[in-house]
Length: 475
Image 1 (tube, helix red, strand yellow):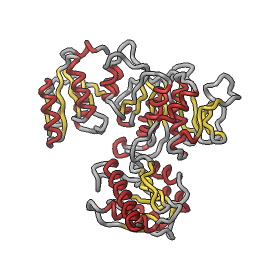
Image 2: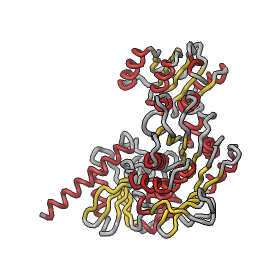
Image 3: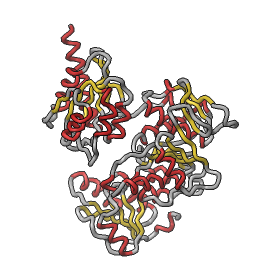
Image 4: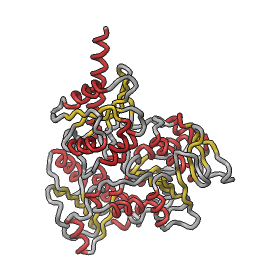
């Protein structure tokens, strides 16, 4: 739909977040009559509302359930649940509901950049960042957008258009984006997450699978996760689009993988019997198995777009991972301290725990309905000790009692601002030279911290304080 189709059209935007504000401004510029609704009415919402009101948006705070009179289209922020009363009212009135990603897709110009899209339960942001770095190394004008970086709408509407976009898409965004058709896309993995929002694992997987619909060149899947290949098989794609797997083991024909420390491509090569070198495992930072898998997925999407092997290697070498994603904070008295606060579910924590042979694990927080038996049973032989924090720590303690009864466990009840420092001190007491103290909570953070970033920063600060104290004691 062209921008002219919005002149005078009455559009309701649901949600006063980054994407909601971006959508409201874009629609206003296109000539729409925009009403924005949000259930909140705090200081942050009032400040944002003032700016949007000054621009010409009608903002209604504290009244998000009712559909404003005369609404012809609803554009929702991704976090709003499908069963929200506003959407029920829209359905009853015959009004379409789009997400901000759907809006961005429909507003693309005739020379719009193709999308290389990434989703999955874990690793989306890292993979999308790696992909953008590889595309940049290939000399392409690109940006990492979607559920990362600049709002997608802002990039799509900017001039001149970029060459290609690295687009991270969450299951929320995909649910509200039925028309998106990527050049190529990847589903990195599937594990139970956000089931309270989607209603079931089947619905969650189906929304993830939308990313493959209409793919033109390649549907990239995880060989180690058969459910991702199942989504490829179920997708309706452009004729000639290929299924391309990635694996941290030796690749079969049509796959990317690892051979003797090398990242190799057996998919985008002239002869499927030949493996083309793309780089080394050592080019990936950090070279943990799940992060190598992320790099291979990014490489597969870049290769689907025609990027040369040398640009893949250069892009991976240039990529700097975001904080709080399996990043080493310090080494103190022979012990490595690693911040993976972003591991907010059991699938992510399992990948992180699997990267180290001897771990003192710092875990706990909001479980979001998760269970921990499978995670603990798989990691039991790596655990040298566990420190538990947060509201749902008892669930992890119970799993430890069942599957790792001999592992020392410290259960910290405190939730004050000094709790993380206390947890780090207890972890240091349990750890010995060669061990890794790993913050991979397997839980969300909001019971004790604003978000996972604040949690990770508290861990890093506590580790730095510990290092300073050890240095002072040795002087």
